Length: 220
Image (cartoon, rainbow, N blue to C red):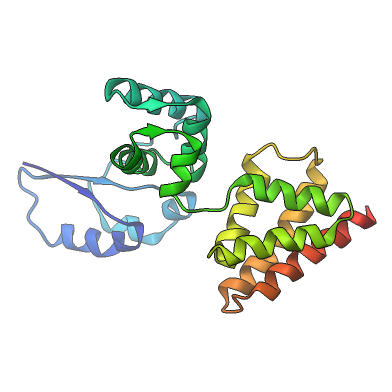
């Protein structure tokens, strides 16, 4: 018999101990995990004997795009190229999230485009992030504040806004920023993100973060 499990990493130790307590005569356990280097160094792996670890590489962005495109064609989903790219971005380039979100979008609106994606996956659009950065570079701090206040008033949490900001810096081609500027802005946002997740989840924290970005850009 073959038993297939898809378990979270934090439950690995419990599962490995359970397996050792079961008579494994003619039984094969297949465990699906997203492994990391820290996991391979984790001592719990020694608790399972007769183990084989098979590594599969991550999908490239192009492969993910082609896979979603293939699903759309097979299932006769109307799509746009920008829609697929936005779906990948908002799904963190995770194939399972992509397919789940695609199913929700199709069942709700039938068309995979940017407008329908943001109706289902309610996250700030990269357009807002680009607008904030552009205004900071141009010396229009009040305009940046207006955009942040607009996002906040729409119901987006500081956590959502800062997380989208960081993702856009790494994965989107926004304004022409060199690597040093991008990393410094990312550092400023990361520190604010830590404070927000520590419980100081306020509009004031967002405005303070934008002020620091503005001051850094103006002094460069």
